[in-house]
Length: 402
Image 1: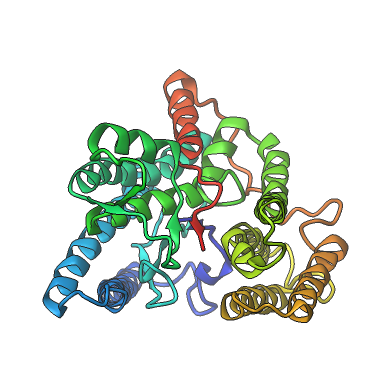
Image 2: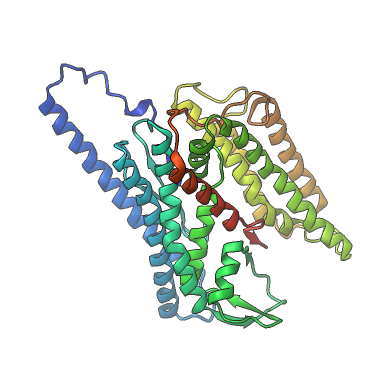
């Protein structure tokens, strides 16, 4: 997950001056380390519990508790192994480059997330000095996570069951990336016409790990992909990030429009509009999430104290969460009035983005913090290109279709 940029919260307090005895500083630092370790451990255990019970809660109606618990344990073990590999890839690379980094902070999110977690973040408490260090730290996480996710998905699909497609049941369908299709082709069982692959718990966990990696490899801001792209392209990446970010908003409308056009041609009209909004809203939500992260980064660096005009972090968060929750709650609503009001609300949010936010001319919220001008070298350039190519292999136009 994204590594948070250093901010003023790590500056010495007024009571710590150059005249402070070294022994006092030595005693103070371990205290902070011990406290941080306990917080990290508590969040990790909470995430284990959250992931496990989310899977138990979402088990099939015909599953016994023992079977549900066994599957939940397999899922949780596989997913947390991938996330741990990802985060400690960042952590170890940061330590090798002598960048002060925190242990990973896992984020439990029971029930609201199908995985029971929103992943994890680490915090960089000192600046990343060179582009070589930036690449190593940014790429180490996704590559370490994929080193587990890919073989786990291969093993998982090999142990998945083929089931008859049930057209009478409304089930969400998981998106498929190029990489997932290749692994299913070589390791999964054959799926004759009218059948589909029901992923095993390990395969579902690995799918979740690859999904999280896809998000992190978006070449925007301070996501892992943003770090890698900035290391590769330098300041030119800031312009690229703006276009990638805006393409996410365009993708929301293109995806929604394609679903609606298909239904209109089939004679369904706007009957399933709510389902199509929910199938496409991922890109809208992440468009706003990245805007929030960019704004927070600017605040942390002291570039400003709050967002311009009425569009601050609180406004963005409330509006985005409200739109997503309303779309989910009223997914099957047939009232045209509700959806007219929903799109009016979306239009107001985007109008504020054009006037005050990331769509305004000259906005720099998604700019990456500058780093050294050193050259990557041939080996690291290849690693950067391969890492960004993994984003293309993991890309899913519709991660979850309702």
